Image 1 (spheres, rainbow, N blue to C red):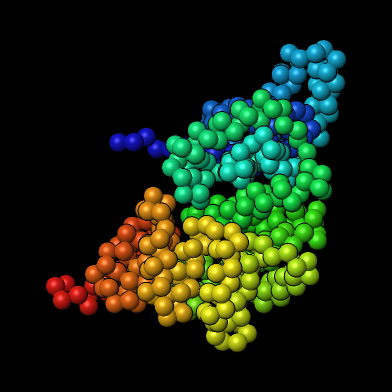
Image 2 (image 1 turned 90 degrees about the vertical axis):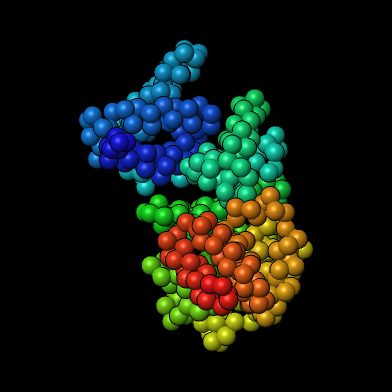
Length: 414
């Protein structure tokens, strides 16, 4: 029989996930490099896992972790040059005195700077957003791999190499000049969106925290770059989705086009509309503006009572041409199916790389619906079985199993 897990150990692990990125960015910005800060905080978390089950969870877990990590950095500083070590140690003593009343929310949120550090040209573009998700936002390699449709061990190896590159290249901890924003912003936007989106896929209390964290980081970025159209687009996108939050977090899964729009937050929709109007003035359409436009079209049902699937199909067509991805292609197929063209949806899905879709739940859910609507009942039942097996949220799993059972009734030998 497996040994019971001490709840205090669980608290330590949860605290580490929730504040790891924030504490790392704070320590890196104040005392040293990203690598040194991450190493010190990792050792602090190990110390917490060892100490808290024996001594109890401190009143302020984040401050405890910060204090221990800071002492680790002080030890490192002492082994450096004497003058630098003395100065750093004095700063840390002062911070120790201030730390008594500090809470996690009091920490200056410098994660945005650390995220931009991950966009340095020395780091492979494809690894920049995953690196932010692990090093800054506290996601593990398995969760990141799932978001990018890559095997977990492969993603872990790539992230390790990227961190080594940061050390070797001595990447500076700073937001790049405005002239570099265009080339280095996209990965930051990707990471923030994945952070928010992952919140919907997670179970438990951490899901709400990740969604809130994504919205918070997007708003900080908007404050820093208030006229950047893609930053405006990302903020609008998150607001449109979050406006439906109360009807999406439920014990019963209801498809988007069937949800009661009276429960949607009209203020968030209006705020998103204003951001989209401002972004449109730049006449520089991008991925997040187009994704926001698609969500705006869904939100139009709260105003008109109907969903304009033709408009949504058109927006997906432009999105795929501008920023092709597996996710946008699956969304396009879903829109085709719901616009009454399941055969076209299946053609789109069949063209995707099977290696990327084999274990991708949204692919199988859309495929099952398209097969059902196209009259391919037996294949539809099989696809619903796969989709339900891959579903994480209990409500969605139950919905897909119910659709499978209903469809099974139409088979002659069932």
